[in-house]
Length: 182
Image (cartoon, rainbow, N blue to C red):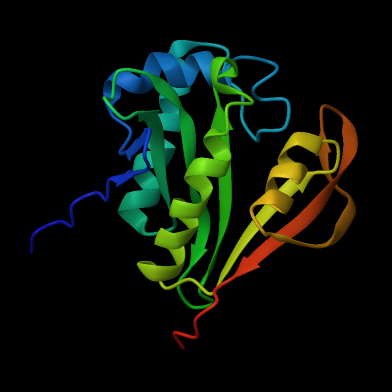
């Protein structure tokens, strides 16, 4: 049986494509930068250790538990960051959305441009009913973006995780499909 081709998505100015080996240096650049990873779940201190993130992106595709895209310029010459779904549950038709960007591309409307097409892919192709966003309470930029993208705030899980030796709280946002594909 032939493997399914990785879905490439595009906006007017951005390309969302599969991560490839030559992205490793940019993935490391982003996920080793203290400002980029301040609210992101992983951090890498060496290029070698960043290979684990590349394996993670591939594993999600292989085992069906999610899908992540590299965000690039339309001509594929500039790498911006990543966006995708984790914890995809086919049974419950939901997934968690995540994203990160290199600092050079902050405040340029990249996330508000790519998130709608990623969510559209989730609802239309993956047949998700619910897309969740778990945002650290202190991540004001992400919380503002979730509101702009019509994600609804559902509540706060207080002191639910430990990060850097301290309890943190997580705000829950969600977007539901507007069509019933049950």
